[in-house]
Image (cartoon, rainbow, N blue to C red; front, side, top):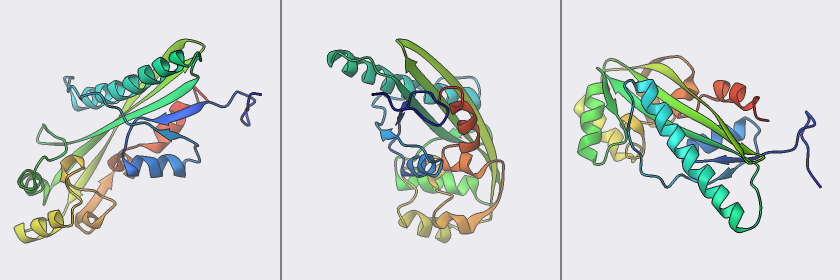
Amino acid sequence: METKNATGRKERQIVLASASPRRRELLALMGLTFQVLPSEKEEIVTGDSPEEIVKNLSFQKAEDVTVRLSRTAREDGQEPDVIVIGSDTIVVCDGDVMGKPHTEEEAFAMLQRLQGRSHVVYTGVTVMSRENNKITHDTFAKSAVVTVHAMDDAEIRAYIAKGESMDKAGAYGIQGSFAVFVDSVEGEYNTVLGLPVAALYQALKRFL
């Protein structure tokens, strides 16, 4: 028997194509029931602007998981009715794109550049729907300007030692102990966290 939501439409399976605990928390705060299946696709950076880069990366993640789910469903003799959410975040300073640091020294260099000034955080999101053998999607990007107080080298080293830098674009997590260095955020705070929930909610209305 089909389960229907408050609108009378069939309930859709929602899958988050990310292992990020922050994105999981934000989806949960939206009141969504979802599964987590991180994308395994190697990221290929393409695009002529930060917006295009994050949109393309989010699409790659959503597409990878949608294809994998479709393949598994066919093997089981089923047709998946699923919504997959892919997302990616980058930090841009002086036109240079900053992803996640690979070493503590790289994290230190990133934070040295960001301290005492403003930079832009871009998050791209793709909502991909597979329903009745038809795949449709909505891809968008949001940005926020983050201004960081001046930090001396000792403060940067102490922050990196907390272990918060290595899995985050720009080598910092605004929701953690780095918060004491954030002077202001212009734009949706959740964009900096990695998932602009207001824009995502509007996009999901198209599919739910």
